[in-house]
Image (cartoon, rainbow, N blue to C red; front, side, top):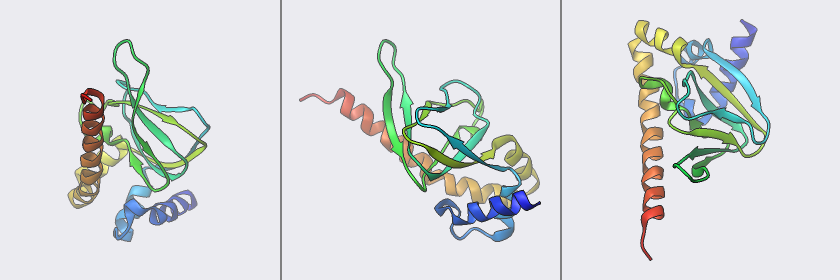
Length: 155
């Protein structure tokens, strides 16, 4: 129980959860864990199961995608307060890109399967979290569009 209370406090301090009902946040904390990744660590790999999503407490990560015959390309760089990993929400629950740390990074991660079970019982909680994720997803799509524009722009 102490573990969940500590994680609830960390969730409450993260901007993604601003204004969220305390009971809802405590329910989410039951699926959470505190994690640390060293510089250059891969948190996720494209095509692998997306079982968690992440809230950056401190640090920097790069979202990378690969094209045949080329090195990875950074789609977006995320920092303190950012969120990543919405692939847990959409079947087949696989990562769409690689996620690599640029510096020591501390995150809170939430287990997607745990959350999906909670959402079946509490539709309002599911709606609350999905509504918070929608702007994140839109921002990632806009970043991908910008990358494509930059790649294929003629000068």
